[in-house]
Image 1 (cartoon, helix red, strand yellow):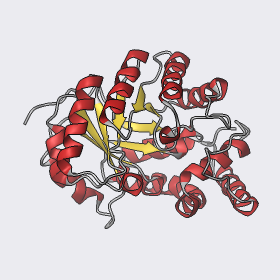
Image 2: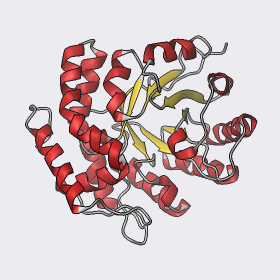
Image 3: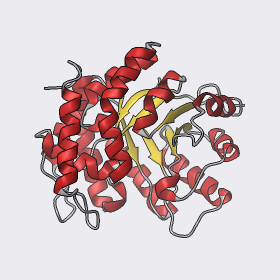
Amino acid sequence: MKTVQNASGLFHGLSAFPLTPTDAAGHLQEDVLCRFLERIQEAGADSIGLLGSTGGYAYLSREERQRAVRVAVGCVGGRIPVIVGVGALRTDEAVALARDAKAAGADGLLLAPVSYTPLTDDEVFAHFCAVAEAGGLPLCIYNNPSTTKFTFSAELIARLADVPHIAAVKMPLPGDGDFSGEMERLRAITPESFAIGYSGDWGAADALLAGCDAWYSVVAGLLPAPALALTRAAQGGHGPKAMAINASFEPLWALFREFGSFRVMHAMAELLGLATIAPPRPILPLSQEAYGRVEAALGSLENEGPFVPQ
């Protein structure tokens, strides 16, 4: 099986996924985006996951997505890699977004099989081949069945891992919690350098302790320091410390599961004093009762230790 050059660990460690702050008309708030990105870079995260699900990519026009990438790359100035989500309904649109990202200076790509009509494995394979070739950057498969309604089989991941430029996969949490078994099966059928990471923040500690390559983190988009502390503890094999940090996050994880992390992150941005932004309609802000629970969860986290930025 071929070896994929993985851009010196581009898809390893903590990848922080910020919100994409926009006004009611969907126009980017550049200063707020830079504020988010600078916090991530200063905390020492390994990469930025721009225009992921947390970044609301599906709600933005091509022009605003182009603008977000240009602003992000200009803001961090090469100090931290930027991985850009390029998912779109049509293959030609995703191809254009991949070329836009490369032209703006992105370091890598993240691609989900966005669809209205359910897709077959062959359709997804052809879609990914076209985007990977057009983008010419290391690309991560975004396996996110909760939003796309498409689940990548191990066999399809193996087929895609043999395609030039496709270097990693971002997996959902396994239903049976068997991270080690899932990674063992995937590593047996993919190139040695193919990176396997996970999203689903409440499972990150278990995934990292089981030896995954990356945590694609929602919460790190606004709280990069404690997310990085959890990541480094797990990477260093310090299980009790990693699980203690994870326990301090549990009130937030519960809210993520109940309301969806996208809604909770918008409330967090305001509570942390970083920005007052509303999610794009038709998504509605949290109720006042839920907002108060987010505030309490953040207060609990701040009391747990010095890893929380002040």
